[in-house]
Length: 212
Ligand SMILES: N[C@@H](CCC(=O)N[C@@H](CS)C(=O)NCC(=O)O)C(=O)O
Image (tube, rainbow, N blue to C red; front, side, top):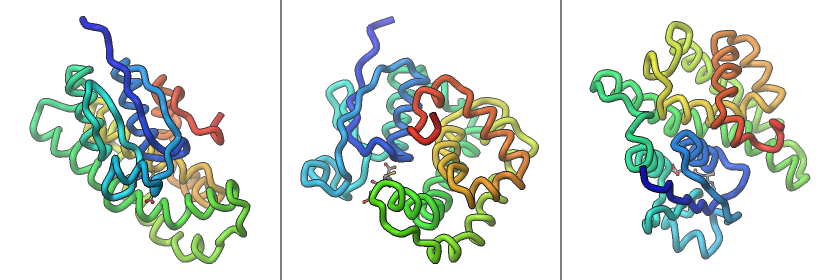
């Protein structure tokens, strides 16, 4: 086997999507380094026309969008081991990645995680009004996630796939807030899955400071 490449990540250090890319690299045995880059900085806007992080450099390519980056790393450097071959299992993986990106992330991020990050890091007053208003929808979304994982070891079925990485990295920050921890505490299958999956080496290696 050839020498594994190095992945250069540009992104904010505490970021759900940065963690997704770091986790896939860990799973693939690809070494990575990160340059702290704010999403809306002029430099990042040159890398990502929609002003999001992360962006990466690997194999002479400049890539953005986490699904594309994750699939590239897994395909080019891990034999596609995190993506099922079977079409029916694959569609389940794709569906849960889409759910994580389109429904879970926006609601969790804006309703709970950003208010706490702003409070802890920028020392602004905690926006309890935003959190209170978002909690019913957050509870609904967590319930849907919990229902899926109640009778299946992983989101696409028997094996650990990219879907588990996306759902874990999007959902775990919720558990780091008091309100999220309380909600997940009542959803035992989800809590057990988060505990189990969070022990994987790739997810231990990419923990946020608040988890250490
Ligand atoms: N679709 C993008 C989403 C990335 C994303 O939303 N990143 C967040 C950080 S976790 C971000 O850049 N937020 C800053 C902003 O929206 O201004 C991807 O998959 O990479």
